[in-house]
Length: 89
Image (cartoon, rainbow, N blue to C red; front, side, top):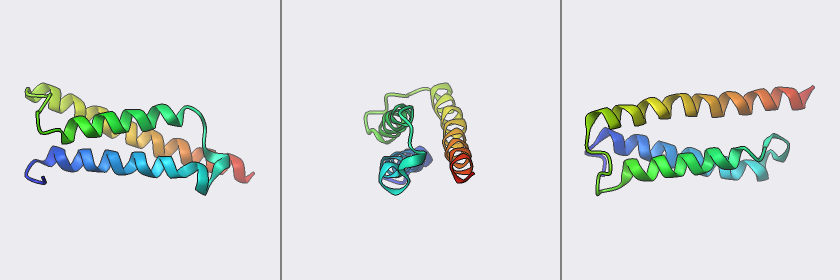
């Protein structure tokens, strides 16, 4: 399972999606409806990267998936931290 580094990125994406799913119970004031879209994107991209059928056979597609993953994760955490700062004031 860990023989390909893309599997690790897929696992990280799925874990982040699961953490976002727990956000309404931990901090309900920080959860917004657009987070549901991010959860779906993380689960879809993570499952594609973990799939054994390898829907992405070309190196360019793999590179694009990695480039999509990094800004999305950064955007999610930055968005949540900004919401927490606004709710504390």
